[in-house]
Image (cartoon, rainbow, N blue to C red; front, side, top):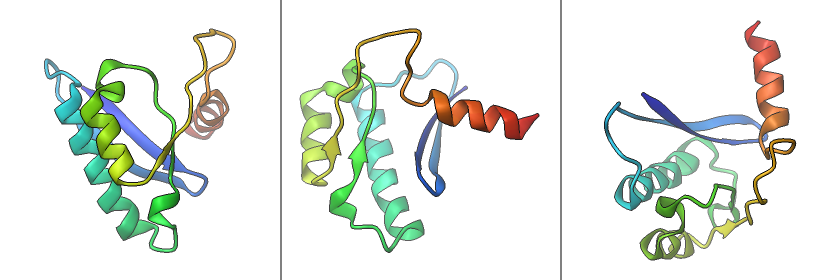
Length: 103
């Protein structure tokens, strides 16, 4: 099983699970983004839904034309994903913090 996690400064907004053997394709990812849209409206009603910053990697499901069109229809901004570096991962500080809490 794999989890896709969306969070903001206040914490986790959405966790979406993918069953073993299923693939993360554009259809799955677009459905996940639509769930995220609805979840933001429900749990963060004070947020300007058109002012969301999205950081994801450059996987084909994240960069397909249909996915980019969906993100554009939400008027969200996609942040550029940095080149791969084992010394820098955008969410490393978050996971370090979460690991300390879990211990």
